[in-house]
Image (cartoon, rainbow, N blue to C red; front, side, top):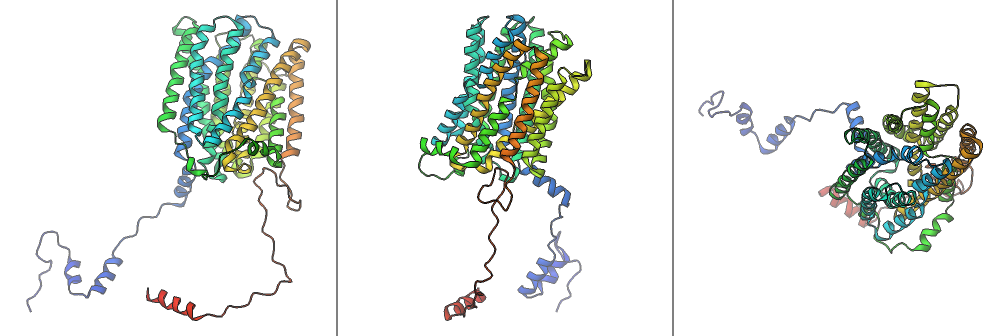
Length: 488
């Protein structure tokens, strides 16, 4: 037998090929498998971080991008509107409160309509797209409104109609794109992206005003162009996860109205109304700061930017914290920060410390409450009525905002701004106490009522009086199945 050369002939031929060629096939397979190197293990910390990141779906990031762009457009107008109405048109606090109420709550019923239509047709993206488009067109309508207060009110109502239509379908798409244990993180990430737009909007408005010689018309035109870009991103990148809802019978009005008969949903709606009634509009807070510190009108839009910056920095961390310690404590902590902000409006601080602390607390309030209430609602709402339920909660809160704005404007005009702000702080304390009683987790011993605090019924223990299970005798069929499994 000729002697084999080492290394064997042939370019690039490894030694193990020659050795394996003299082995039986079974031995070659074992040698081959033993030489396969296992992939390098990912460090536990990296795997954990990657899992946390992937808990927020791409659809949530797409919706966050749409909200970011849309908020740039909206905040361009919102940042200059209080200044324009109160200082430019010389509206009284009560008149401004009525317009601010229209801005925040007059179209609240359309939230419910939008939620019901989205659930009935299961086309949440289409309903949200109509809302975003209507708000974009309303920016151009501000050009025709001029200095007419009724016309401005109608345009604002149209803009808020769009917001009312899109809010519930958008939040429902977030909940349907996220596992229940990560809802706080998902809403926190979405609201953080939303707050980036809210932070950039006033800065863009200031830049446009500086370049256009303080022309508000230029702000409205640029705002429309930015809003149109947001609609394009929605159409191209957001997915409507209709497959998450079983194809059952269409949602009826009676079924939607029956949501209020569910105790957890009813308590959430009531809590949202109480908290909305105790919250005054942002414009009031900024006007009070501007009057107390005698800020120049040039710097007024930056007050909204300061709040948005605090929101931007805190929204995602507070969403993660809500998933860890509970959503209710984080939300109520946000309203405690709001109470402190109201008290500081006429408190001992002044100058730059007052502005920094008050706007920081105000941003903390929004970061702790904006997405958390919807995250609380997600687990207690049925999938096929998810959008309607969220819209119901948002409608109650928006109607309460309407009443709150009018009442605070009346209190400012009657008692003065200092007394009105302290009464608002007291109202927040009462609302927080009532919300804690409504939404606190049910004790395990309590029968039947589990609140919206992610509590699930525990499995019942086995009855000790039941006879022990008897062993089952193997049949011939079982034995034949076992033999077949062995052969396979």
